[in-house]
Length: 477
Length: 111
Image 1 (tube, rainbow over the protein chains, first blue to last red):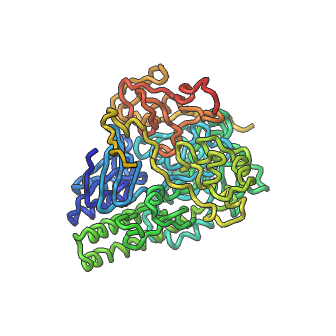
Image 2 (image 1 turned 135 degrees about the vertical axis):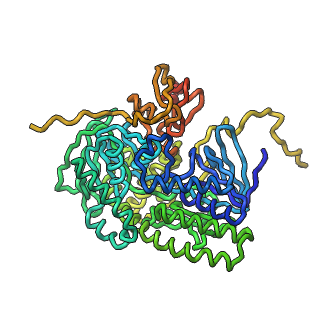
């Protein structure tokens, strides 16, 4: 298979990857951008699929359109619909799309893989009609589509308010909005949030939209269970204590609903950095395990750069700037910018990035999962959706001596299904840490394995004849 | 007495001004309509098809969850190939089979 070679191969066309590509192109580097989606923008700047989805423009949508325009004009070669399934030292990148497998090689590789959403389980989470908060934003932004309703929108942080207001704006009905954070948590974050008065104003607008529509907005509350068997009918809502465990003095209330959108924060997507052996640290205030990345976006692994939320959840504005920094650094490393020219251009980016990060980190800290949420997961609740592994099964393995998530995986199949442990990893590791009474970092992380994504084998193989398979010459022996 | 709770829609909805061409396709042999190019999850959900497969061990119904190709809960067979419905655009005449793995392995011995 022929290999396409570039100065820089960018994995992920969200704000970080797209801005890195644009910056690197500005300095003459050849750049390829790979993304499994059909357009650039990532989840935050998800491209509208139809004009109707863009009827009511937002500042985010405009920023996304600008980013796509810049990328389109940059001269970077764009490979959408391409899923990266393997990375190897030396810049080799293996991808697959509808036409089959393709190979790329970059003198430098930028990983800008973003995040996945964390949802700590409870009874009824797997009922069809229950979706992630991020999923709701994808549907709203790309299609103006509204999930089944009336919808209970729940979780923690700004996304709860954004999705609830977004559903109303798109003509749907919201049964209630529940934010685990309390007004006091929001107030504590305010000095940092005040750095972005535009975003604060927008948040206020969401709250006002909910109030106007008569939607109950409950701070310090969570979904304890969803009932209805095969479809959502009723949501049991409970107040939580400061550690997010259920308040025993609150009997809870039942809310009639047809759907639920729920999310407990974002987790950096670090499978790619792990596969390339970049060192990682556990930093719960940044979303979990994060790769060790220098100021200039380089890592301990030569020619591997990292930018955006996959290096620690910092938000879209910070990701855009970190991407620009990565683009500058790639240009420096490739010899297109000398050290002085790099420093001159990097200084203002670094200053702006520090400011954007202060805002992003305040949100990230507000959303940091507190221990009571996992503590409340009941014994018969499914933790691993793919393999139907309950908390009780995990604890059985722990009683037999397991102390690491990979041992849980071997013993119970938790994390071994098609999502590759992305949905249950956070919960499983916390259960291990709680049961073994050890720091969360000691519970470890799943070993990153290739393929990085589930990909159809027939697409990887393509059409081939047996004679085409290269055979090594017989060895003496 | 409390007022009666509002009726649940239990289906996806989207703006009729979407502007795309309406096309027909098949789901488990049944004809459905959707907008050309829209996400298959939204098209199915708009027709009330939320359950797309059963979990392999407990056999509980599952539907689209993450909508970004991560969770794999929405995997269906489209024209013979296993794909996540959230990454599949609606095309005229496409043939969608839900709960495909369970059908394929129905009656197979438990290992």
